[in-house]
Image (cartoon, rainbow, N blue to C red; front, side, top):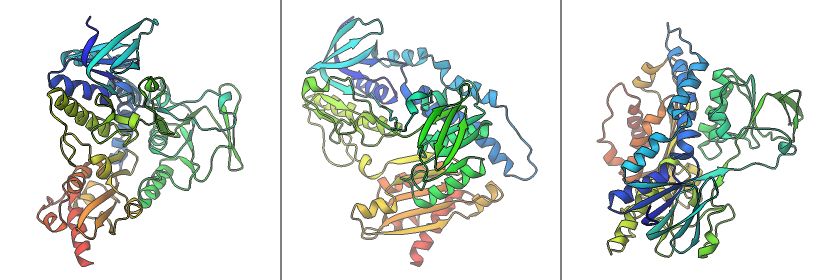
Length: 468
């Protein structure tokens, strides 16, 4: 095997796969280094299995909102379907894809040992040194953050991996953390049959979302049977009888069979040998980059969660495409562009990051929330309205949703849009296009929504805005 490649990518999750695939498409030779399963966190322990756990119970909940419908589901079948989406945690298919795309897969832990040089240590401890003629791309993702809860180190607890790969449904589940993972998994397990208690240190779940979205998600969790304890952290964690865990917080004691700790993640930059090339990280471990993903010199890139810019799978894949194009440009003797919205700049990271939280109701937003826009110094007008159109009424009895639009007053363009309601994820891409394209509201009048779709809310937004 040759030990020299044009590009060496460390990390074989979706982001690293994208970087490798696009570099290979540009005619560059690529090595893809992965210490665990090729396909990474998202494919086996995060986005894919978590949504598989949520989907069947959500479909049943949606059906039950129509009169005359009687339907149920088998939790064991949900777990089985989840496992099918992870290929039973076997990455043979992903390896085949990578090799067909033109990448050489190297199994082991990769770390920098000098400029353009990576040492790959296999599972049996054998080291191999590979050299990158053009670039090294760091795509190592993120790792969970464990809070300093007293006694947490005395019990066995779940992280997100253990929750999404669970082989059985615990009778009683405790969840610490009201972010995306905490809310989604609390809902999933409550619907799969667990008695769920969620502790959230702050006053609202999903603190980065619009307040109305947080409120409605909290109501949805309670409706699903989750015992939601806001402004309540864990004062103490202790072993209980058998395998049980005792949780003490807010002056109360709760006994659970499993505890899920979902208190956030940080960039996975430890052990990458960054010091060997003079690169430091932020306090949270993020590798600083420019808009092309370049971290150091003209050869070291960092894309995805490891750079801390927009820690979402789709944004990481976007950054990987940008970085691969910039690498190919340099390889061809050209200077990558720096203009906003060019093929070599990840401008959307600053202005138009879309995100969906698959709770019930769903939350989908892109760009700035109202508070974030004001902190950014923007003069904005916020339009908030109920999503009440023919399409939503026909979708389900009692369908309820909300839209929050953040408009730049000077340019009369959208800089942020939030939807909260059942199934609103499918509304998000239209909003993303409007924000990225900076489409004037006057022009949006001519984007006519089809009758009997929930997208008619766009017309209601424009009418409300014009009415002042």
